[in-house]
Image (cartoon, rainbow, N blue to C red; front, side, top):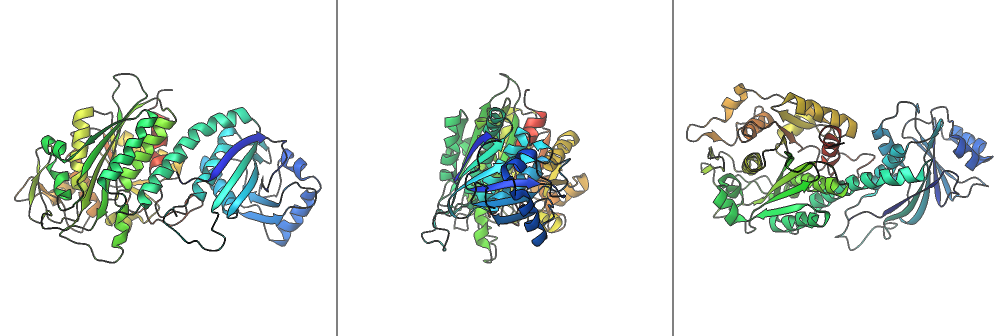
Length: 499
């Protein structure tokens, strides 16, 4: 796992090692334990702040050589702004800011988890630790040469000085599982497509067995027997055989209906016969961002022993042009029995999801299903990279996802569904066609998927703008963001997990 930060917890009174990080409000006020640790250097910090025009705004940082008498090599003062009413996302951001001050190579850092009004809660301190780990993630395993100063990478032993060491350690266990899930998802999205093809993706999902996750892998023969003609049609032009992986975590009551998450896993998408332009086609290695999220989420839930029954399902294919590839004009039969006319072979993700959604709905009878897919470029035009598009047939589920998005910082925005849009994918030759044209492209894709949920409460998240290539943030400097793991873990924790 691409994580070189070792986190520990010590009392607030412990001596600082290496770089010392402290927090102030927008009046430059420090906490009592922090002021005691700095001693007479407090006035020097205020003078340095004046010289640097540092006003303690949220996320701003003052970086100075540690004043004489402070047992640290450097002193980082991070502004918390108005230190009342801070949210969990603020503390994640503070962790990312602290991480940005870590030099390459071995380093030690001590973070004083204290605000002007006293020690942070264990959850706040742990959120800083999570933000720090997320920010320092790098995917550089294939680099044989590195730039000056990067040879050692970012490796740090970070001590959090907290008010309650035992409580912080306990809170960190669950938080670490969630961050690990995000890192797994990022690794999967960042992998090159010649390394991460359907069989290898399925093998990596199978590693979750060590956490107690039950894994079932459906090969081409098994999917053909089930009638998954929509999914198999996408992959028939590839030399790499398709796979579907069903993951089950039984942490809830025996026999209780599970919650379900379904991910699109197109390990590489050329567009097939309807081939994409060459420009930026390399980015299509990330067209499995939904499946990556589901694997990362299943890791997070199992590692923190979530008290809920969960099904995670991913359809894994390559969409390649070949003499055996699917053609525009073909008609395929899905597992549901519904027939689909192929208008554009580059509208392939919905075909994969159609069969996996139907399988999950019929075989597991979940309380709800949420699917994630890098499905349409149209969603990026509509929402940019700040929100994922959300479509749902259930208002309660939609409201809970919206709330979880605000809490986690992985935001969603609801778009409409309706029979007027459904008409756009009616076909004169089959039950439906796989694309409705340019207008409302994200909506007609969601309307297509809705035909395969069999009335199950369902939400579709179009993550094309958020799973890969999104702008860098305080807690993500990676091309693959791992979007969705924290969002869906929060959804489960808030509303579906047995307390």
